[in-house]
Image (cartoon, rainbow, N blue to C red):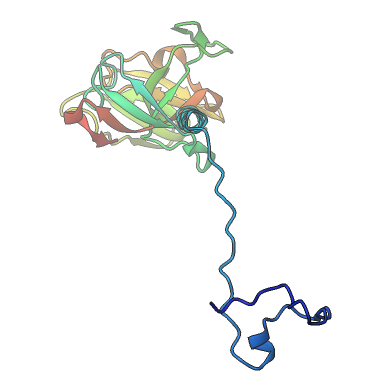
Length: 229
């Protein structure tokens, strides 16, 4: 064995304290031994039950953040948006999108109409608790009217008027006469694609931007209706 004993021989004088802890071979000019590997701290064991509980809490938190603040699913309850959306379709709604840009004409949005409880009411200063889904037709400051089976948009009353092109409507579908209605600043004129059965801004007035929940951007159910809007 090449280990050096630490105790001196009985008839030898005690060794004087050394200035370094180098072994004799190193002091004599030999190669030093390789350094010892670093001692790694022992990994702390986590109770499996605590770990599982943490994973579940994190999963619920992520679901809550996504469902409450970013994207929320809704079920279409009526035929007011046919043929774009059918009763029973499920849609995904981006709740954050209008933090980055203003609502645009043609957007399909989910909102609370002016009203109370489950009813939309013309001239109401409060919002109903019911959810509606419709399409943005008129923007703030515009004048909207139904004329000769089409929607007419004017930049001001009787100024800069044009018939709105609506490729999302079924061929041959027409709009009954209504208005004109001037859209206040900060509000929007909403209409359903199925004009014959839609309860929209023609009946309960314009929609304040504060009532908008978000933009519907895709259907996810049933699977044969999976698509973007």
